[in-house]
Image 1 (cartoon, rainbow, N blue to C red):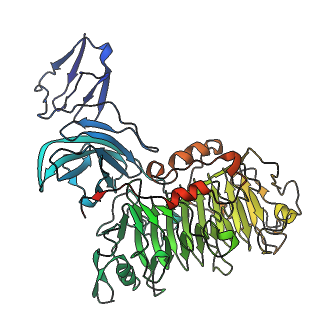
Image 2: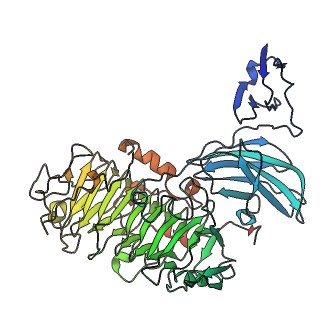
Image 3: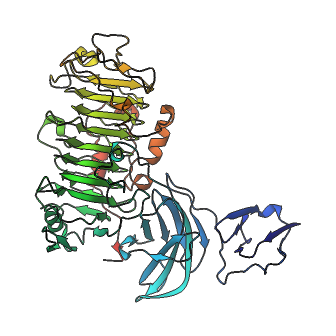
Length: 602
């Protein structure tokens, strides 16, 4: 016989019927687990000088764990009521629950709290949605930790029946890279509308952008130096008013479901959700654009920024965008682009724009940017990084991105200083990293699978062996360290400085901290490596993963929550070497329709 004794405040509840194990929950949230097969009986003994344990009125009845999403910990129903929760899981600074419709319910209220807290907070009704056969609520803005999410049915506004509670674990986003290296514009409080701990900033304004609200949402925007406001209706009017640069409140744009371009554009850009400051001395600041759940989709549009500070874009799928998918043009600082799915754009007029133009272009003095954990699906031109006349050097980092059968520009760097680390190059038809116009790139601990030309500099090395990839531009210098080259194709070419000091692709460093001598210069233009990565006044703190583990880490965590609602697996035997449009993927994108039925808060 096993005896279990508890102190005064122990909160005890269990169910042994049809369970494999017994979970015992203490008041501080600690869980103790016993296998039912090992128990003859359970006896509660009173601890000396303490009262008997308190049995709650509504006992907590654990069920078998729900299968978690990628990047999450297991979700668990800890109190089963009239709402049957079918799924629950945490993600990065967020979590969700799904449940079956309750007979007679016209709505649902959803609450959350830290598991060791006493009081619940109700989430916005806009975060509660119906998908027909089930309902779902996402809780966002959660600092890392364990949370209880409570769901209760309601009829005509009045709650009824017994609530159900699920437990989720929110994990912290990785905040590394150049977006966080300079606090001159962030003030150390976090990039975008969220604090560094994942909570929403004080006085932040939340806007819910849906297919229904995009033309009707309302906000009074400060548009004069003396605090005068303009009453705006629709996202286009709001963004136009923000261009004045007098609004100081953080803005959090939450996108729900599939949103088409009509009504999103109109603020000075026909293709994009457009954030722009009209005056270079009054930038638009502290903006987060985020998708809610697994299915937030910018359908037919992209995102463009001009003179923006502290901007974050996360958890959004972009399909059939026009011009560039994500574009940062003209004097943008402290930008964080992460956990997005970037699909095909709309074909442009040039032959190399069949998949859309640039999936993500960063140029015209855009600096201090982190591009991390994004999933690029067969991009034609993944990322142009810099033009020709940047004031620079500008500092950009790319980490843990999944270049999934994309063709080129991973990135193509002009003028800038760029750290490319822990990315997964997965069957890339043309080339990986390219440098021109005096750029410096530190390419570290990446995994190149079937990438024929992993690194190139204009008019030298591998580029000089062919017809030339970079339009005759002057070259730059790449420092390479600890990269993995797997499944090398027959046309694989990687020429190190150590093997050819006259014409090379990259200087192969013996350690992360090795400096490249100034005497090592690009063949065309004569630029040398600027050693930004060993300058402690510039470089951020980071811990690279073992490159051999990068494919597993990246494929589990890059892109939207749980991999998004449109998944696609390429055929390596065909798609590795092909830079043509994948007809199956394009048809899936063109035929995409959201499964969202309704939003309770609309």
